Image 1 (tube, one colour):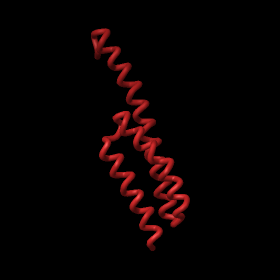
Image 2 (cartoon, helix red, strand yellow):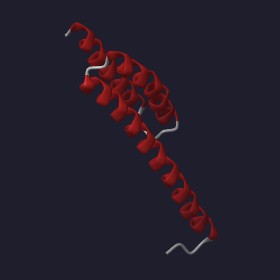
Image 3 (cartoon, helix red, strand yellow):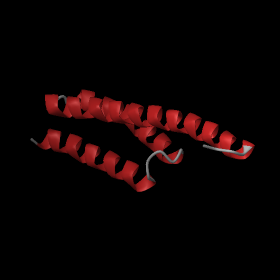
Image 4 (cartoon, one colour):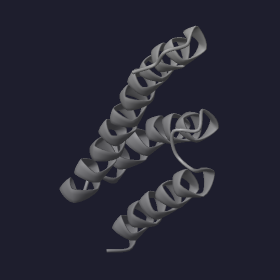
Amino acid sequence: MANTASARKRIRQTARRTERNRARKSRVRTFIRKVEAAIAGGDKEAAVTALRLAEPELQRAAGKGVLPKNTASRKISRLAARIKALALS
């Protein structure tokens, strides 16, 4: 157990930060799920719209340190490629 005031404060700060990060990560996963559902349904317009909403959410999570920057970029890139492939098929 934390004995010093500073250690107790760090515990409180970590708990608040963890809660925020968990909410951000969950929100990102929800947006990605919506894009993937539209892709699975074969609806290109809905997929493009969903990606347009998901992209800033992923970038924001990367900016806040919830996701690594390259991870966010990779996810956006792969979703965009899957949407582009819808048009070809």
